[in-house]
Length: 79
Image (cartoon, rainbow, N blue to C red; front, side, top):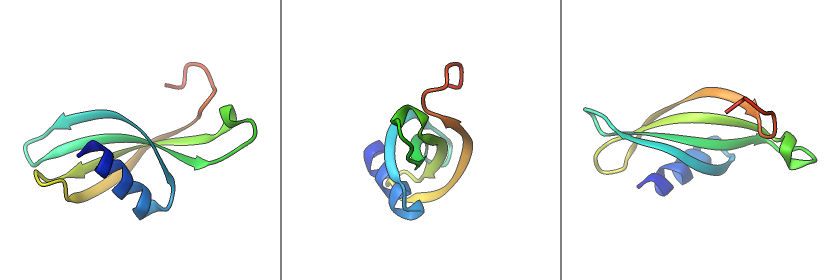
């Protein structure tokens, strides 16, 4: 379910899916946190990343998403 949620988000926002960093049960379904590469840079340690919270129902259907924060992949103390 978490991998499919990450792929659904990536398809929706047209970005490459990254890591699923959190899965949490809620009263309405699930909350899934997904890291996404928003802007690729050279070197890749300078990629602009974003953390999204995606809400899905009990059947894995995407209900909504929001970007929680943006950060540079290789900057210490940002995660």
